Structure formats: structure tokens, C-alpha cells
Amino acid sequence: MTKYESDVKLIYAPQDAVYAKLSDLTHLSVIRDRIDDPMVEQNIMAHAGDKVKPEQIAQLKQMLRNTEFTPDTVQLNGTPLGSITLRIIEREVPKCIKFALEGAPIQANLWIQLLPHEQGSLLKCTLGAELNFFIRKMIESKLEKAPEGLAQFLSQIPY
View: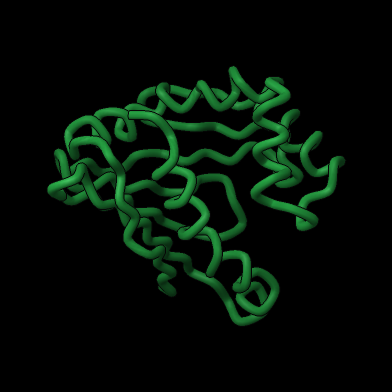
């Protein structure tokens, strides 16, 4: 299994509050609920710059509209690969949440690690994926960036 890690991010919220929000995936439904807010699209464009085209934003919005959230899963419906589920498979209160990807053409796990800090808490994301040689060459550059992007996103949401 190949592992990709983010940098450690500082979150100005207590470890328990961050863990409580991230360990119940229904809290992430605000993403879907706010996707049509013009400020959200402006924020995405400001951070992504010319790397994201308007039609990609429209596809993302449609996919998020069809996303289902439960305490243990996020199910993405309507992706080019069909239905893909991110499921919590292990919780270590208040330090770690481990996820598994289901329904995707690759086997992958995600760990979100949390540590207390004097100003709040520290967060690190690790992605582990089983990739054959050909798939690795096609998607490795995106997988290398994924944990950092997720950690950056998670460090900016309100807790």
C-alpha cells in the first residue's frame, strides 16, 4: 500500500470539538446544503484559479446534490464510476478516524489524525492506496495532492 500524507495543520478549536464534527459525517452535509451559494463558488474559484473550469464546478455541484450523508458514510451518487462510498471503519476517540473507500476501482483508506495543541488541535491526513503500476502512473499526481487538499479544507471549516 502506497501512502500519501498531508502537512500538519493547526485548527483553532479543541481536539474534542474537531473529532466530534469529523466523526459524524452528517455534519458534512452543510457542503451539499451550501453548494448553490454564490459565495461558495467564488471561494472555490479563488482557491483553484485557472485549474478548475466552470463546467467542472457544475459537475461537482450536481454530484454534491446527489450525495447522501449518514453518521458513518458519505455516498457519492452519479459519479462517472457509479456510486462510491466513504465509510468510517474505525474510531479512536479523540485521536483518529479511519475511512475505507467502497465501490471505487482502487482500494484506498484515509486516516484523519488529531492531536491536542495549546492553540487548539493539530490535524494530519494520510491516504493509503493499493495501486497497480498502470493506475499508479495515471493518478499518482492527484493522489499525492489529495491529503493536503483535504487537510487544508478541514482546517478551514468552522468547529
